[in-house]
Image (cartoon, rainbow, N blue to C red; front, side, top):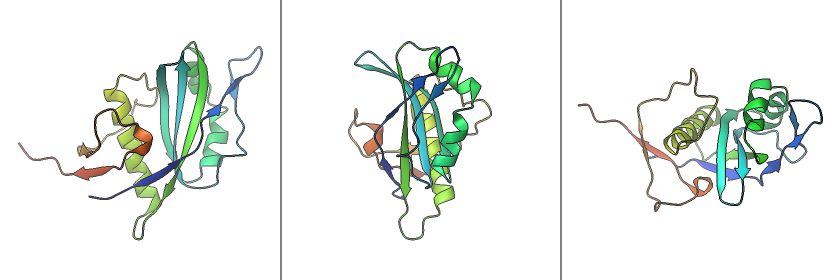
Length: 156
């Protein structure tokens, strides 16, 4: 089992651009570091819909490019509510390779969001490997606090 640690930042609110199907967000608090990110819509006080989960070797550069992602912006705007993005920086332990680890975290996030019924737009073409996600946390623990590990799928 490997421990993979993500330091989640505060959610960044996305502002609607008047007369356009676009959203803007401030990238000054987003680090130039490898990590994962999640775009979501908060509907009311108790409902959140995750729309996109991704990873990057440089969060600031990747998220800057997402401001021009028309498909993502339309998906976010199709929900009534406030749009947000939350970045998480990968904190490598000795011997961990950031590129491989953040891809693993991204796959786990996507699988978790799909199992919870979120309307992800980035599942087309995404190959999720056949490991089981193993968690020793109690049911209901928020994903931002979770340690992630894998064990090989048993052959049938």
